[in-house]
Amino acid sequence: MYGAVLKTIEMGTTTQIEPKINVRDNRSSCPISTSLEILGDNWSLILIRDLFLERTTFTDFSNSLENISSNILSDRINKLQNFNLINYRLHPNNRKVKQYYLTEAGIELYPVIYDLLIWGTKHLDMKFHPRLNDWYINNKNKNREDSIRCSILGYKKFKSVLLNY
Image (cartoon, rainbow, N blue to C red; front, side, top):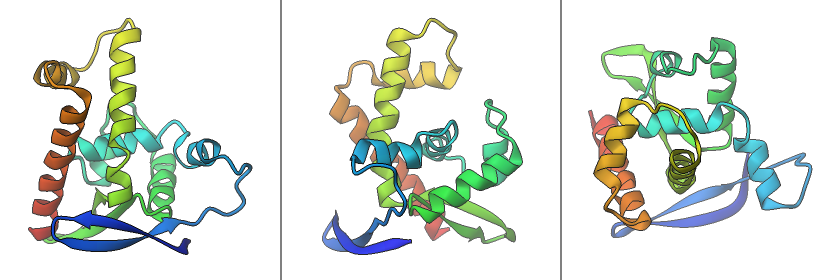
């Protein structure tokens, strides 16, 4: 499902070539419209959020407060894998358990997650999850770029430990 066009990603001192997402049968030539075809359903960005929250298994995703049904969860996981936004490894102690993680393309979605989070805290009159309150306290004195950079670096450290376990 990946096209021949490649994107170069700088990773420290090495360069990794990652294929661009090959989109077939899209309704529009607009990148916003096509991106929303991939990410604009009710669950895809929630799964990406959960991965940033260091949830890695089907059970972890199932236990999220949003109560996603197992058939929809399976569908969204497959969709995100097909678009190379997530991947998995088999758990070293239980080969039946898949541990999902974000690819570089998935990690690059963090600014979208961040901006939705900030927009929601500014404009939604509701009680927020305690974990969000803790995140907000830790990030309220950082500018957008520093907060995003710290969160992405934290996730990359987590991912490195996960993959090297």
